[in-house]
Length: 157
Image (cartoon, rainbow, N blue to C red; front, top):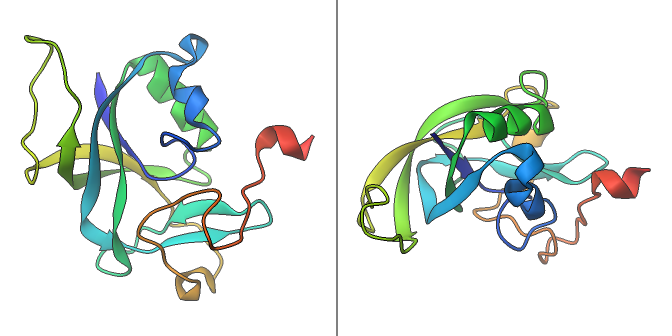
């Protein structure tokens, strides 16, 4: 099992969250809400208004997201969904736990709030030159007050 940190459309309440729990894609279990220990620019860009976390550590904000534990099948699905390696790549990051999900006794190690743990995150080094100057966000919401409505894959058809 692999820990993944998601910050965009795969989070709870966001347009692609359902993909995390489609058994055909593999297995995912929510572990915790968290934020990156390092600051990164999170921008909304492109004609589909996709959230992009630019791999520019030290710039932007600490990013709020969620930690999931996924099996190999889900990891392969997510790599394909995130267009690895052309659009995104997996980056190992330190994340600070805000709140750990309740788990049954004996189901794994919990991390205390305020502690850090490692997780993989999808970030990009392939972006337009003006993207670092776009507004930066510390948290993504497809229906946020930014006014940039996310265009789902289904909406593109």
